[in-house]
Amino acid sequence: MPDPMPEGTGFRAVDLRPLSEGEGTGAYCVNDAGKIVGESGSRPVWWDGDGAPTPLPVLDGCSGGRAVGVNTAGLVAGALCAGEYLQPVCWRPDGGVHALELPDGAVSGTACRVNERGSVLGNVMWPGYRWRAVRWDPGGEAVELGSLPGDGETQGHDLNGLDEVVGSAKNGTGTRTAVHWTSSGKIRKLPPPRRVTACGITDSGAILGDGVVWNRDGGTVLLTGEPEFSAGQLVRITGRGVAIGWGVTPDRRGICARWAPDGRPTVLRPLPSDDASTCFDIDDAGTVVGESVGKGTVRPVRWDADATPHPLPSPRGLTAIVAQHINANGTVITGYGFAADSSAYRGIAWLRS
Image (cartoon, helix red, strand yellow):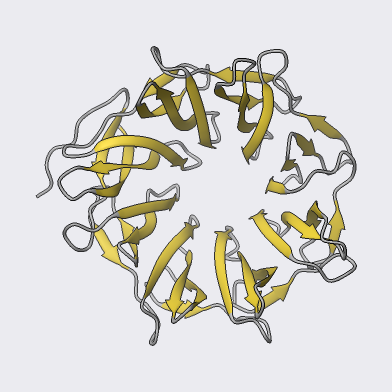
């Protein structure tokens, strides 16, 4: 029986326990039903709301791997280790593991997103470390995504519910730019102001890039923090078009922010006594999760829709460090902390009380 978990400001902390004593654990995605997926040691795993781990099966000839995405239906995507290469896979809700087909000539691949249709986004590698973005349809067959003239490298970063993909591509001279792929795999450069990559896309067609949102109607919204900070990394966009990311203040402190669909920023300040903040995910209601940094300390934090920061508690035996993911309905947050007794990093889930 696990120890009672401490209560926090609306959330209780749960230790995501390992399959074997002393292993580290990592949580990489949580769906709205509260299913958490990731890895224990080097094995793919999922956890229930009490932090109990269940191993995910591996294919014959594979030694382990990790699960990185899960949709509402419970379809899990990830990759397994097959010698020196990776084999992208999905785990069906019934628990069975299925290999995702590699395009002809590819030797390795990873999965990074799974949508509600059951389509999976990933990237595959040919000999010589040449990477290309690929989407697998719900049946597991690969749909190769187009490249720019010159047949350069491509990378897929996000997938919406319509099977559209965004990411980056290199042209024949090696210059990288932000791109969008249609559901059929046709590539296009994003319009000015073009940036290096695109990291998010909504079902309505809003695309998040480096300091910009491109809308399906052709309009663009620049995301700035002036005069309070210079916008830097953008990381997530919600279905309602709310974006989050972080930048740097004039005195060189990191600060994170949330942008409304019209580009208005709201600064997400660190916890009292801390001096910097970083954010990683946002739910549909505008709750943001990340870390608050002080002199020698890093703490997990949750910002409410009104931008008020709240610390998240540590489970017994762990020191919580950062909150990295939150499901769309805001009921479960995941991140990690440090277990001093095993000198291992361990996944943590915070469940809304």
